Amino acid sequence: MTKGIAMLAAGGTGGHLFPAEALAHELKAMGFSVHLVTDSRAERYAGRFPADEIHVVSSATIGSKNPVKVAASLWTLWSGIREAKRLLQRVKPQVVVGFGGYPTVPPLLAATKLRIPSMVHEQNAVMGRANRMLAGRVMAIAGGFLPETGGSYSAKTVTTGNPVRPAVLEAAQTPYTPSRAGETFRLVVFGGSQGAQFFSKALPAAIERLPEPLRQRLHLTQQARPEDLDGVRSAVAKLSLSGEISPFFTDMAERIGAAHLVICRSGASTVSEVAVIGRPSILVPYPYALDHDQAANAAALAANGGAQVIAQAELSPDRLASILSQAMEDPEGLADRAARARATGRPDAARLLAAMVEAIAGGSPIKEFKERRS
Image (tube, rainbow, N blue to C red; front, side, top):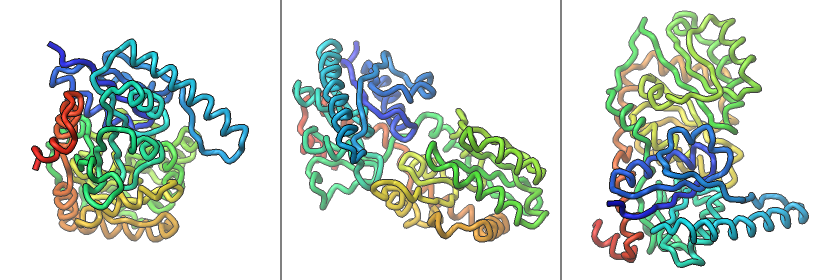
């Protein structure tokens, strides 16, 4: 017998959808029916999302200073709230959970108006704008890195960690095996939809500066934007490197699991997945993130020695080549960083978050949930 419907709302990027997907698997196993509210960007991820139904509701980002654009965005949001209210009245979910991004605002605001139990999950160490708008209205806040003390909403905040997908948990079963002299060294590089451009230029230039014996060991997996794809593939071909360059990898968790070193941005889901799998990484926070949340996320993993954090402005091709050379010639050091990364991982985050959702859906005050957990 079903426990009812849990409606998950998430912006249409991997950073928002991956933790929602992980929670959806857990909730389905507990007996909930799961619905997803998102935007059109989610289409490439939708095939793997275990939702019984997927809904698209109007929403907009309020980021412009142009009053005409602001007015248009507010009108779209207002229309989205009306759409979401009709949707919730028809579906009748027991709980609504938001994962950030502006597509979460209409369904969560509608849920609070209809007095449907609601909560948000914040992946980052710094709360995003959409979740900040909702934090005062929802019953509870789950955090990937948010502390349970000292914040404005600490009384209703639970640090669950960031849920990771089943594919990540599967990849975590593979132990880290160092690459020694003369052996293939698998390097995985990715940067998300906004952050990959820098790596498309920096990585080939850095690899070109490596000593030939090290370069011959490399097997490169690199994410590149469609507009950068030909340039990166051409540069890699000139260097006679083996590997795969693509705008999107459906098996990225498996590729991280096979990596000897990961170079990437430090979005919350990325940091959490690299930690759970337990791989050494070089984290390059996206410098244009509005709240500098990526720098805070990276610091959480680096504090335990699981990652090296370098600002993009400081990462010249020469320096990156030097870092790669040192890493490839220090297999024991990388193995130690892998173990330290794994020690910070939260593989049970989806289970804890699902228990929190179940409690909120059942009407339990968040204070009681926190007391039971401790």
